[in-house]
Image (cartoon, rainbow, N blue to C red; front, side, top):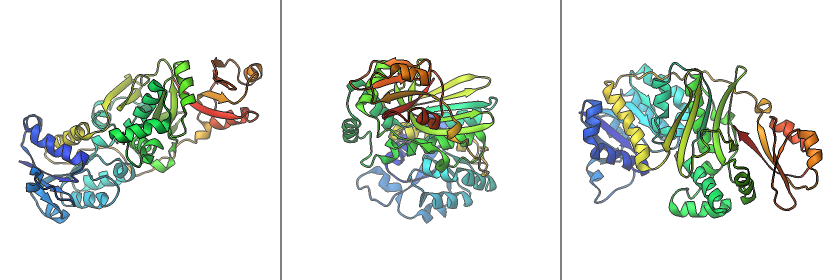
Length: 401
Ligand code: HSE
């Protein structure tokens, strides 16, 4: 019997509880042992719910029970999750988590602690929900040098952008519907300002480089400023607008960012719509490899969390090595990161002047009183701003090809 304690009985925790109970036969086949939920920790009561039989309110009951092999942390947030996870590890319990804030901030430290205590710390569900991208990076794709990651890492923003594009609605209108349908939080800031995607690209970049990438260092821009008019141009030019988490290695430097991009025809992520997530990695041997699936929700996320539990049980609760050192890397300065751009200006009759400044631009049929084009050359944000200093700039959005 492999005993698990679940910390938190919210959306993900209740999914984990359900999956462990409902899919017991599948889990046993792969784990080679029965997986049992011995405890669920939550501050709340759940009268009439079968979870009552295993519900506790005191973490020490779990930490002091030597029969608990693995702790599933699905509370979210930094504290008390961080303290509980570290205490569990020092008591010889493996931990798996869906908590991207915790993993992005303390992943390297907690992995070192797990190694020291010969237990595992796994976090498949922290990026891309149910998509198995982390195990793929750590176990399946270990022969490649990866020079880029591009990810649609946030379901809420992808849903909003897809809906804006297909229905011609404004950001505020779609956000309201998304909140009503439960696709967006009441406080949507972490999603719509890109903070959630930022933690996720920080985790992926740390795993690819094997070093600590601080999410605070990642240039992050969300989608709350995207307008109906921007979407009109995206549709008109056939360049779908997506919020990307991006990592690129260039001339020995690692660049990482989160920003809205318009995606070119050849881009592997251009048809990823709605609440779906996808991650494309580019390796020197394999070329492009893409993972696609549900990045949020109770059961898709629980699928990834429970796969970690199975992996730990299969490995006899020993340390599963993941290379992510505490040594920090300095990311490349975004001032020297160049892209093609979509540009929207409040001006008319300046096409020739703009062609002189930008060369062979591709103009898009404009809205009244505007000029819009896609550049043929790549610019840094600063270079572009300088070239546009004489105009009233409405929008600039990077193009990813
Ligand atoms: N708020 C996140 C999303 C949930 O919309 O993708 C999963 O991290």
